[in-house]
Image 1 (spheres, rainbow, N blue to C red):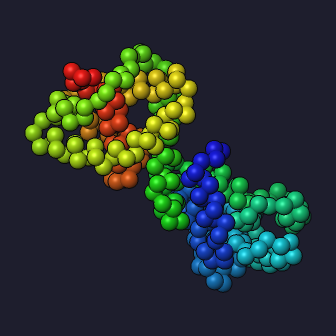
Image 2 (image 1 turned 60 degrees about the vertical axis):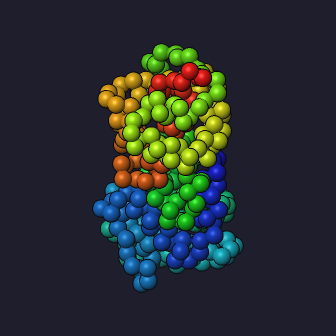
Length: 291
């Protein structure tokens, strides 16, 4: 699991949740992971020790978001929830899981294991591992639930695209890079027509502030890998047809359908930022004389 700024933010936010706030979060996480038919939600109060059921695993979960994680309080809560599970659920659902939002200790693991052998005690690292396995769209939905700022999502999403482009770039032929100064207005006029010129220039001015983030991410890769990523985008663009604006939009939709949905405005924004960055770098589109 990578230790990205987004994952650090997830950790901070989750560790601050207590009581029903933590329970609600786990319910949201498992609904995203398993879907409404794969995870059964029960009422918060008088739930008889069950905070939800993972249908496919026939597993009852119990959540505990304490103000502190002292052993005595932990053991009291575990005993109470386990008694409720034994008395109300075990005959139908043979598996049980206990979830907390802090780092688990050996004594806490032994306590849970002593109640029912093989029972998982999921702590903050386990929760983050579950989140890490979600796809980009699911992860962003969970981040919004926790009110995590979109700036933390930008780099994570862009990294996802770049990693995937790199993974699928082995068949792409090398292409010369361009490093001369770029005159964006002239370049846009050379590739776009009519009212599209001003639309693209306006969009460029908006997304350009994210180019530094894109550069920071790209330069974390080895030089050879950077070339492969750029070559992959060039190759994907070469597989489109029509006017330049149409080809640009086709590639946007292609990446959106692969990494998110066409109706996801945030992902659309970051996808366009990446493609306009590549356009500015003269890897796609006709070049001006000064390039």
